[in-house]
Image: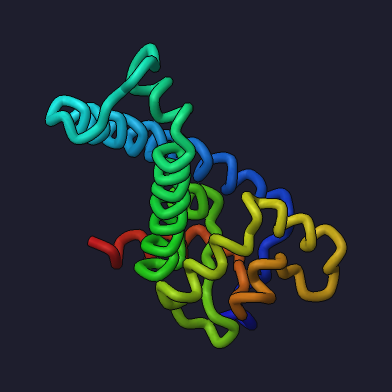
Length: 166
């Protein structure tokens, strides 16, 4: 497939990342609410004590362990989001809107492991900056590390992928 479709440039990747960031923010908010409810439940069961903190949120902020757990949960949710969509169809919501697809170098869907590696090594999107100087290959840092590529699909191919998910 990589011979059939060109590799994606920086600006298309960046636009896709903006879309996906909005989705990740929504997932982060939901994760945080559920985490706050779980901690509140532990406090209600007298398994945790809020001490002199104003509220549950302040309690979590003051506790290095609880704050660390929340941070790890947010990373897990973000990495899972990208890995799931990349392994299932090669496209996140933002990638679908901008007709991008991530795939292995031989044109197959990537694995969950590759997706997780790719998401982590993207460095919050900064890995895409490499595309600006990699004129020949148009691959980001995460593409090199995970042995993937991002291609730009035609409108027809993008619709075909979307319809095949039904």
